[in-house]
Length: 151
Length: 112
Image (cartoon, rainbow over the protein chains, first blue to last red):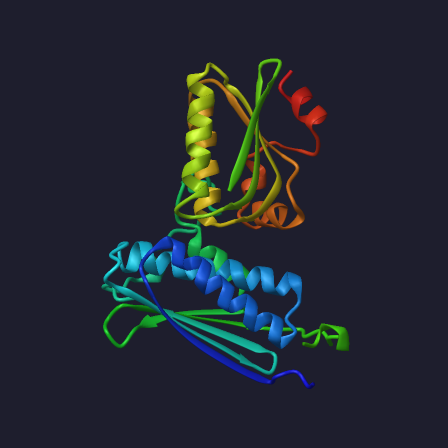
């Protein structure tokens, strides 16, 4: 069976940290079906977890009545993940550099840095409802799966 | 996240496994380190050999624990990092903050 060249998924989750596991499980399933290998999958998952955690904690302020919307798109070798929250939005340029020596011992402020390290592009904007939308893109190097991997 | 605790001489070894992530593992680390300090153990070795994932909250909590222990005159060191957690410590430049050891023997020796 040929590799699927396009895969899409959409999730709407309430703002609970345990729901990050659902977002992760969905991404892992898409990675497996697209032939995305272990290391690339690991860093994709790492970036996704940060984006969803930020949406829950900073965007929606852990209010479970507010939603986090996640769009996953695997299009040939390009993975695009968009995460939207129902918060008030924020200015990403105000986030200090966590690798600056003055900030190294700060216990927070590394989430966006994680995303930027492990994805090729990270763009922030406004969600239709006024919250934050973050779109992250990573180009994959796909492996060829053996027939024994096929179901 | 799962944890196991043992004391070797005056060093508290905290073995962690699984995910150290927001909402669960990060808080657990704080509790384990605070418990060590309350037990009078100020030399703490975090064994991350079984840790599969650590997010920015988990890293942040380790930094907070490092600060807490250091302010009390103690030492907190890390041991047995996976290659990916080692990568994360490098990109965050926290590798310049933490002492990182490869084995229990090396870890125990580092406190002497």
